[in-house]
Image (cartoon, rainbow, N blue to C red):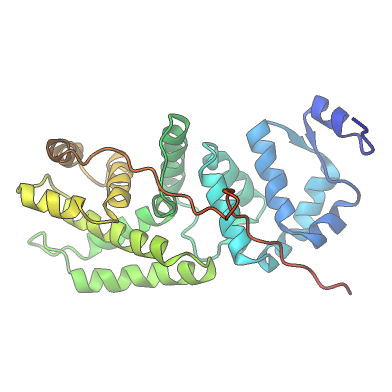
Length: 274
């Protein structure tokens, strides 16, 4: 191994730094700031002071990165089993709100959901993109749902759907989410209003379980129960009903691959030379 830049020594010291001037490296590709923080969390490494200082100076550049690349980095973070720590590092550095301005932010409930996601992924679970992104929208949606329940316990579906679209559509557009992810996220969240209580009829369970978005709804139902928005009795009631029809096995989401069988990584946007 011919090491021109002291990389082996950095590995031995547990240190992350850029090759050359960090400001120039981040000007070339702002996503490198997110990656530096992500690797520090994943590897339990330190970031050298010049790199930390450059991230602080250049944090506004992250808003110039292409949306598909930023969404890719977020989903990779959410699948890492260390999403809570990475998310916290991005927020402390001021990158997260600039990269994802349309995601609901800074709620204790969202952080708790990310921690649950990490625990389940570490245990071998796999989640669809809509389930992972739903972690950010779940607390806000459940709050909206409570506001749309009348004295008789009935939900104003039309009003709730309208308000749900208002919080989802900006993020869907700015993050360039696929139509499938948008559909599953929208329907998965709204279906929670039909699962607030234990099911009374097997036909209701069977009808919902056959929907292509139900696995997302079931994932979010588990998160909502852990947060205290849905009672343990309701969650266990649905679990028993699904077990009776054999529909409570986790669904492994399909990954869209390129022709060579590799996961696609969005291309980096080339910066114009001044």
